[in-house]
Image (cartoon, rainbow, N blue to C red; front, top):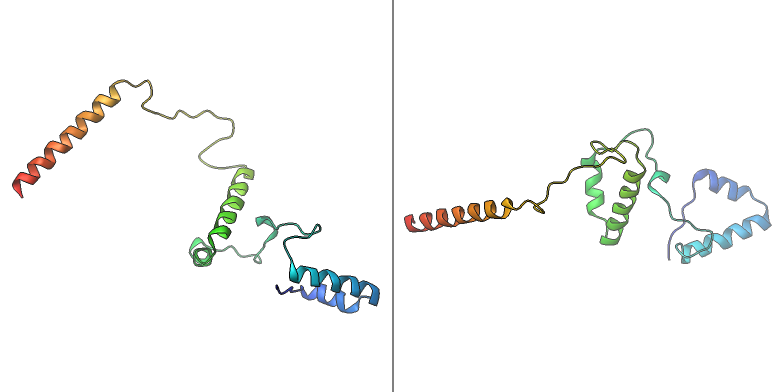
Length: 133
């Protein structure tokens, strides 16, 4: 069972509604109390639906609350934030439709040999340190 909280303006409108409308609203509120997520007229809120006044919160203010979330809620938050980033126009330093060079070891045939030399040097250094100890 869930608690349905009405905004003061909505509560005032509900209190002033005629009996027929108040009865319909009461029935809807009862349905919400029992199954708030599974109703054809209910839609999930998006991040942009929330507003905390005119002030912005810092990361240090938000993190304690985020850490208290369940794993599923954290995953939903990640999805919401990813959607917000996708919709953002200026994600610096990346630019839309620009090709970025990503260096990889593919087709760089000397990289493997250089890596092996570095690993062998580390191994020999470890052996020397082991002898000293």
